[in-house]
Amino acid sequence: MTKVDIAVVGAGLTGSLLACYLARRGHQVSLYERRPDPRVGDGERGRSINLALSERGLDALRRVGLEQQVMADALPMRGRMIHPVAGPRDFQPYSRDGDKAINSISRGALNNALIDAAEAADGVTLHFGHRLTGLAPVTGELRFETSEGTVGVSASVVLGADGAGSATRAQLVAAGVIREDVEFLDHGYKELTISAVDGAFALDPEALHIWPRGNAMMIALPNPDRSFTCTLFWPYRGPSGFASLDTPAAVKEHFEARYPDLPPLSPGLVEDYLGNPVGRLGTVRCDTWHVPGGRTALIGDAAHAIVPFYGQGANCAFEDVVELDRCLTETAGTWELALPRYEKQRKDNADAIARMALDNFVEMRDRVASPVFTFTRKTELA
Ligand code: FAD
Image (tube, protein in one colour):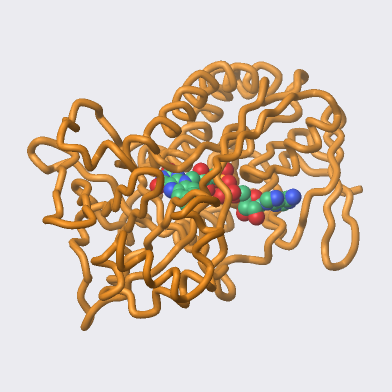
């Protein structure tokens, strides 16, 4: 069994950034990721996801000198553009003087930049193709499946940053040390693309575009190659649900009737729709994020995945990393004290944004299109 100092499980956004922060504190960090290195090869079809990165997330990047590099690929969105079924589009600025923006950024590009930074940090070792399958929370013994067989590791501290479907969390639940509640929406998501037209953006690139349609909606965020990634947030069932729209004719007819400005902008719409997967959306709540003793904790989506309607999942995960780092400083690096302190500082905030994200789905898909809507709430994504 290999002995390591700190094992971080998951080299997504949270795990890679966390590795950078811990390395800065002088720790030896082993970062384990089930996927192969995402910087090599193509991404998964229909799972490109571009994020709205806001000040909360940027602050975390700034503290480790990554803001400028990440922002070089970001596109500022200064307001939301509402696309009604008929009639003119309505631009609603995020600030009265139009100077505030949230930033559209590719999740894959952001993840690659963070993995690069972790790899370059002294003391971080990356292990791709390592899928966590076992964890003893009190002793810190871990088991990974790899293409070469099973690997055993013993760590002083284990931090689970392995996302909404966290295997670390599942191990802690199975060991009876935490309880989880996972609540799935009866809506899923599917991505589509609007390509550049003659090298230009087909829609205003300084806006987050929203097609509110009552029980369903679509959004589109700009990409640096002048395309837009659209995301449908639709119910699984019902007349505008994914299950009933499963033939080329039904799909074409539905978009022409409900999203009439889209088909002319997206010639491959029907093929994209039928070929791309539907992703699930849910909220993860845990009664606690750490195991007493200072050896094991959860962070980011693994601890508190939320639905994406406030555009705050990654932003919130980055704030976790900053807070954990702060708690380590305040406790002189004593993990036994730092982990409960980190949880205490973050959990109420995470619970609050989880509720707000669910509420904002109703607002985005329905109320933003209503003439009585006024700009009374400071929303970061919508
Ligand atoms: P993940 O990104 O899920 O990373 C987890 C990593 O762990 C992955 O690399 C995975 O391969 C790895 N892993 C999983 N299991 C194992 C295992 N057994 N062993 C080893 N490794 C493992 N957030 C925003 O801030 N703004 C937005 O606008 C926004 N929009 C979104 C839109 C959509 C459609 C979705 C689905 C999410 C959106 N989010 C947004 C949320 C954001 O993507 C997540 O909050 C963020 O990715 C969480 O990062 P993470 O590293 O905690 O988890």
